[in-house]
Amino acid sequence: MSRILTVGAAQMGPISRTESRAQAVARLLAMLRQAKAHGCQLVVFPECTLTAFFPHWYYERQEDLDAWFETEMPNAATRPLFDAARELGIGFYLGYAELAVEDGVRRHFNTSILVDQQGRIVGKYRKIHLPGHREHLPERPYQNLEKRYFEVGNLGFPVFRAFGGIIGMAICNDRRWPETYRVMGLQGVEMVLLGYNTPVHNPPSPEHDHLAHFHNALSMQAGAYQNGCWVVGVAKAGDEDGIRQIGNSLVVAPSGEIVAACTTEADELAIARCDLDLGASYKNTTFNFALHRRTEAYRLIVERTGAVVPPA
Ligand code: CDT
Image (spheres, rainbow, N blue to C red):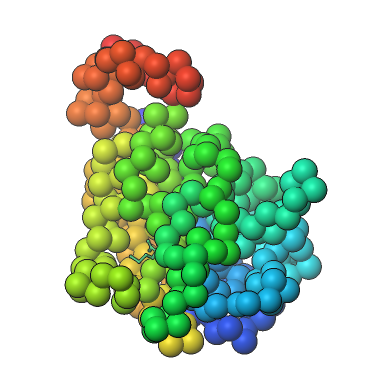
């Protein structure tokens, strides 16, 4: 049996701090149309797709910071994307900075949404692993103020029945942590979509810089293989106002093999025909958790999370 989902990994080149949302959306629309022409049903865009990755700069005034956030979705700038999704019959994953009001409290999240082929939002995720630091560190070549600007996501790692399969989402630093994939894996996830902004140079550990591409692929390949799922990782790439991002967008199969990759640091579409049934042989044999790890701890996980358990 096969269930084919054709996916476009829509990497973006840098977005300058002076670039408007409208300019960014025009670039996304061009890639959405290109993806449609190549038969894609789903396109994955990066983390904080609509703007420069602003946590790299320090903002003192709340209104200057809030200007980077979206207070509704869709909004005037992004509505053309939703309209195009409906007209073309193609879905997308979009990362953006979300300013929500919950119980009268203003809350800032690093968010992604899943939009279906009718242009409807069918899933939302808020980033859980926030890297970087809370205080301004002017001695560094750039800031990584995610801990200051965002709250930890409060939606867990949900999965969504969409695009004929079970789809999950993650954002950037989440991809380095095994529990990201595992929590979704225990819910039967078949494809994990994730966007990222990863600088080539990490000031706290420059000794790792030369391994940036290796660690990027390693995390996603391990997550895919150990959970029998596809992983579609999509970057912002190139020199963004002086900070070089790694790019290296990848589509990884449940075997752990890389089946498509971007090779530039610009706007670029990598396409893969993904058989959602491919994960089953990994979930049912080598990684048959119910068969090989039927422990008391696992029984409790299943009871509390409603995880999907294949028959023993
Ligand atoms: N945006 C984001 O989460 N970036 C982090 C930078 C950490 S530097 C190793 C990432 O994990 O890619």
